[in-house]
Length: 289
Image: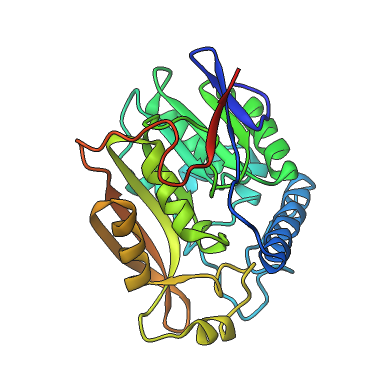
């Protein structure tokens, strides 16, 4: 297991995510609000208190987005802090069909619950990367991995819009209720396509809005930092993935997250013949070494 880093060394070279797009002040503020919310959640989990995607505890009007999708056996086999820090809306590991020896990337890995579950699925011959922008979550995840004895994981600091990995690196990308929080979703989709190997696949849990809901109506149902206001519609999600190059796109709702909004499983493939260059469609990765 590597220490927390802003990049990863592969074949003797360090790859670091570099954002080359202009970020507006509003975007910075929104990203900082997300960071603060999840930093607070990490601190709560590290002290033995359950974190909450809806902030301030789930006594708010926003329901429990997870739908109870982690079974008791999975929860009991992990460090308590990893379970307490879980802020997702599903269980992407259960739908990603991970296989022995695969390389997996978890976008927005939080306290590490899905990284640790994935590490067991892929075994010693596999590798799992967890990417998060929050120092507190990364520190918690690393402590959880050490407690669990997971030797085949790496935790990376960075943004999901600028993934600090080389092109064509991973077999599977998972993510749990994180893409809705992104301030630049087209960049996320492009970056996912870039780092996946040809023939690679997505197994994502996320919140998705029904197509008739306007952006304003989504915001009425919950805050951006509560995984609601920033959600894409089914049509927007599907078209965004298709524009990035993904095929065989499936978006399946699992349970209600808010009125006319759903936690959903998102699956898609990178075509087997689509090799991408080191600097891919999002142009956000450099080689340094």
